[in-house]
Length: 175
Image 1 (spheres, rainbow, N blue to C red):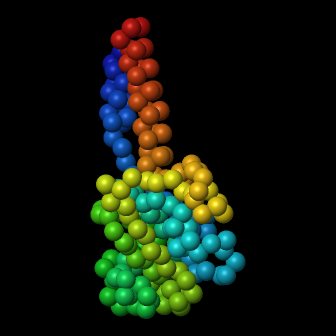
Image 2 (cartoon, rainbow, N blue to C red):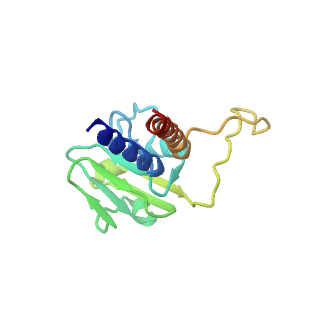
Image 3 (cartoon, rainbow, N blue to C red):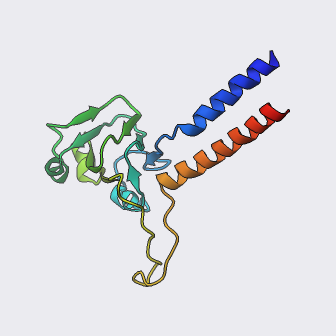
């Protein structure tokens, strides 16, 4: 009985270690997707600019009494809510990137969009390698470690899951 449970646990961990999923980004952090008040430390686009997004990553929009619209670049610029590509109005939303390129998000409430509740995301092409960020203030003459991004987080999780599965395999086969 215990041997069967241990085998099942081993198989689950082994296969979990080989599956790599994208990283979920929380749009707006703790406050979520809401109309800017002017007291935020950064705009949605400033937040997006310091992150690296990849195919398979997701955005988590936490909101109430609002919506998230995926729109064209022109509709983004004009806060045009009348012809969205996708429309999410059912509360918290998870949006998964299925391709590289630009994605444009706006609030479905016109006054919110005009106040800055809008977001542009650039999803990196799989062939693009993350590059290190230049050291602050020096124009890039010194190397600085790259920003932590979804690839780094996935790699760390995958590494630890694989190591754990390896230890379990050793315990299982040699104990």
